[in-house]
Length: 113
Length: 114
Image (cartoon, rainbow over all chains, first blue to last red; front, top):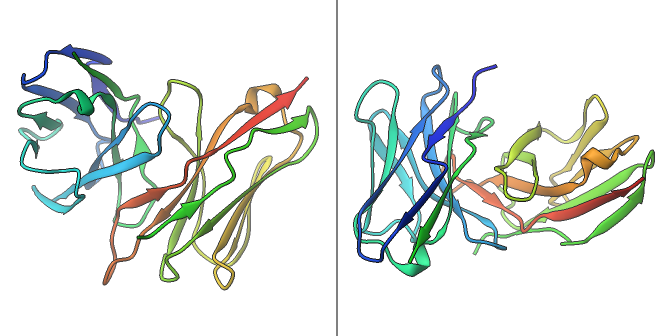
């Protein structure tokens, strides 16, 4: 069964460093998303991406964040200058159409020290 | 501020019983509703989707939707210890038209006692 994959599973970085989180969405899906979950808190929407552009973003998704689909399979989230409060699980998800089921990857645990 | 509300639990049920999980949402225009299961330290796993009023059954799971009351529920029949997890209610928010952002509740922790 097709699934969303993410790498790395765990990333440790120092405050102020740039990180890139990678995702491979399900192959026939057209909509891609990033969510995050701070330990003990709700899953929060960051951004959605369709047709090579951002379709929606949350207040969390400020200028420090960017997304890209560099090729036909990968979808990346870049955080330019990490802060301590960026420490969280980051989940990539994809859906075949807008409003339909979103399938989540296993997540990347980001730890900023 | 659009909200999805769930009782955080824990909800404790004996093995073999029916577990009933509830969720309310604030955006009356919401169109799509989902239940995810999340084991500790893992990602949300989609278990049910429901789009219209009424019941939808899939194996041991039944999702129920009442848009007039802005209420979604999930019933798990014949609960097993392996069902012990946090169950997340998620609502596809409508914001001036079709959208694809999911708003999650805090989740209900289910504990199935052997």
